[in-house]
Image 1 (cartoon, one colour):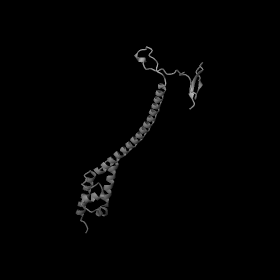
Image 2 (tube, helix red, strand yellow):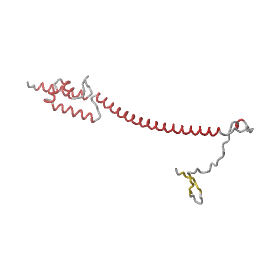
Image 3 (cartoon, helix red, strand yellow):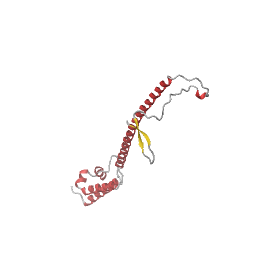
Amino acid sequence: MALSRQQRNQIERRIRAAIDRLLAGQIPPGGACDVKTLAREAGISRASLYRTWGHLKDEFEKRRAAAWAAGQQPDPREARLARLRDLNQRLTGKLARTHTELTQLKERHRHLLSVLAAKDDEVQRLRRQLSTFAPLPDQGQGDNAKGVVPLPRRDVWALPPDVTPFKVGFKGSSHTSPISHR
């Protein structure tokens, strides 16, 4: 059955009104800013929209694409999805940075624990060495000197066996400075 001119104009007005509503963000419950919802809102079948009113479907898709390109999001669900995708991307990046930082902190923690264990070993060794010395009698030096055990003197300027001196040349100077060969 062929449509009269009046019926065609009426359907075209309904389709254009539905286009305007959808692009203005007035999305019906359960719908979206798409061709399926456009046909439903205009009161015609989707097949009819594609066959008979294809130029209006194309106009809708062009206007929708232009709105998206301009940063407008007629469909609030699509806008929300875009925001959630952006948030997800930012949080994923933050999680990766936090994971990297945690890994670095764990490695530093392991390193500091090994340094602490080495220092504790050194303290224990020094305590054992200190316990081998006989305590000195009180020499009347006041309360601060009680229980102080003197350590054997050693030359603090003596170089360890793996260190050799080298010359540092300053104008008129022949200063030698130690360098380690480790």
